[in-house]
Image (cartoon, rainbow, N blue to C red; front, side, top):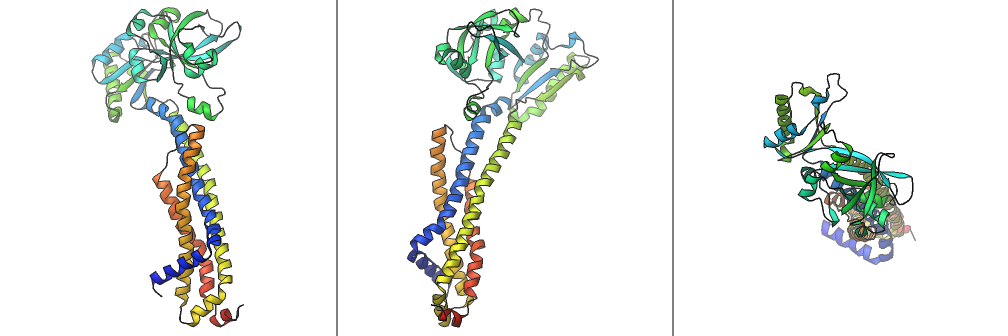
Length: 409
C-alpha cells in the first residue's frame, strides 16, 4: 500500500466515525485556541502598558551631578550656561533640566492633602518626554517665559477631581510644595493621557499615581527662587542609533567646561519600562505555558480514542493483514489518522484562537497581538502530538496477529 492509498484509507475511516473524530479533535482545538488567545491578549496588554513608557526612554539619556561626592560644591550644579553650551554644540536634538517633585493637592474643603507628582517642564522637555493631550492644550511659549500659574494634569486625576476629564479645563486647584506648604492656585489648561492608564484598567483603577506638569519659570518663581542650578538634565540624541556616541560627546563637553567632570553621571534614561516589561514577559510566558498544558491533555485524548479505535477495528486489521497488508501499512494508516485529526484540530484551534482573542480583546479594551511564531509552534506541536500519541495505538494495531484478529467478534 503506497502513501496515497494509506492517506485515502485514513480519511475514509475518519469520515465514517464523524462524532468520534470530532471528540478526538476537540481537545486539540481547545488547547491551541487557549494558547493563541492567552498569548495574543498577554502581548497586547503588555504593549498597551509598556508601549508609551518604552517610547519615553528611547534615544534619551540623563546627566546627573553626584551630590554625595566629597568633592562636590554648589558651583558644580548644572546651570543655564551648561545647557546653552550643550545646545550650541549642535550634537543633541533637545536639552532640558529634569525636575520631578511632589506637590500637596488640596481637594475641596478636606484639610487632608493628597500627594501628586509633577514634572517641571520646558519646551525642550515637552519634545523629549511627550504626552498625548486629550483635552485643552499644552503650554504656550509666552506662558513658559512669563511663568504663568498654569498646569496640565493627567486624565485619571481630572476625572477623579471633576467627574469628567473635559470638565477640568479652566478649573483651578490648590497646590503646595509638600503637605504643609503654602497653597497656590493653578489653572488647568490641558489634560493629558496618564502613562499608566492601561495598567490602571488592568488593576481596577486603584492606587494609580497622579501626574501633572508645571512650567519651569512658574516653579522657580514660587518654589526655587534662588535658581542656583539643577541636579539633573535630560537630553535626546539626534540619532537614537548613535546614543552611545552622543553620550560620549556630552561627557567631552562637560570635561571642557568643568575641571572635575567625574562628578557627573551620564546614564540612559530609565523610566522602569525595561524591568516592568521583563516582568510582564515572564508572566505572559507562564500563562501561555499553563494554557499549553491543555494541548498535552488533548494529546492523551487522541491516544485514548485511537486505542479504542484499534480495539473496535481488530477484525478489520486481521482481514487486511490476511490479504497482504504489512505491519508498515497498518502503522502508517493509524499514524496518518492521528496526524490528520490533530492537524485539522490545529487549524480549527488557530481560527478559534484568533476569533476568541479579538472578541476578548474588544471586551476588555486591549488590541491582541498575534504572533506568527506562536501560531507556527502551536501547529507544529499539534502535528507532533499526532505522531507522539499516535505511535502507541499504531504499533499495537501493526503487531496484531492476523489469526487472533480474525477470531475477534
